[in-house]
Length: 479
Image (tube, rainbow, N blue to C red; front, side):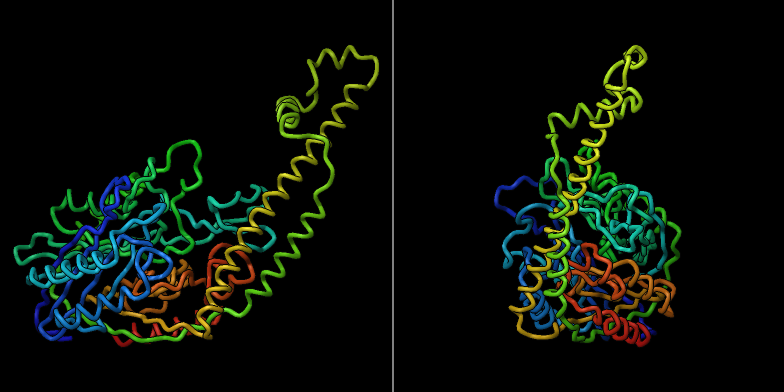
């Protein structure tokens, strides 16, 4: 793109919330940033939805329909269109019908084109680590286990360490010619899972963060999701207070504002490149299901006879936890007794308690195995229904000054994002996912034998990683 001409930028948004009478805590939006250097236009679209395609509100044909209309009616280059899902989660349909979403999103793009103004741009970074955690725990036996609502967490003594997170907030600030902030584009890596206490429709922490930024600065805020795949809010499994993503949004919004204030803007050049990639689909799922069935059978065999039920277990357990030396009565009863009958009773009950606890642990493992089996079976059927060995994806690279965004249609994990950052020649490099399609999770190849949700909720073969990295890094170098 032209390096000698100041760039113009325009922003707009449209509400795309479901209109069927479900409770709505805060609206969902399609937010748009358009850039133009008089030779080429780039459109960045952030949508409050789970994915652009896939088994969610927007079908697999949505992206192609929206892009075709944008290209034909607004003369935006198809290689410069990035559509990112913020990945907000709430139960049930969140968006209005797909035709309405398409119309409203297109209207936002058109308005952004109509709002173009000369801007200067600056890039920067802030940090926010207090509210996030890598949800896939590293266990002492070398496997991974993901913190989920669908099954219990592992035993504390089995956990070795935590996986990586990316606490950085990538920030672009766009100033008008009067030096006032016009827009802030920011990216962060975390699953938006907490929702709000009454489980109403919500944009989750990205929505709360953007509102704080807009209210405090008077400019438009556009959030892009990053390498969220194995990261979630640290309080996701907290049972002591209602689940609420607003505090996370406040932290992110305030940190972004602080980072944006430190940015100096200037005239920059921009560029965009889109390439196709064929990513291989898995062929190992049947074998992995068989392995899980074998483990399931072994665990079932380990379930031995036990005399306690929950009614008798709980008071016995409490007694033995409160006073392991004298669980059956006061200590003086043990002193007064002329034989060891109380000690014998305690030993018998301790063994009964241990057996009950062992069976509970076995039940928890069976619950996790069954969940993993169902997920793998779902993806095995999906792959068989596709009837092919690869899935066609597109990877979009956009450079704005020294700030680079590289897209992925998969929910990318932190480790791959770190590889992109360390391999990029640009100071600020961020993977934006899931974008321009949806192919479920993209886990590093080394994770596949370790378990964890991200390699069960996964249709891509391990070889996908090298292909993606090769194409993505080639795009980055050409930007």
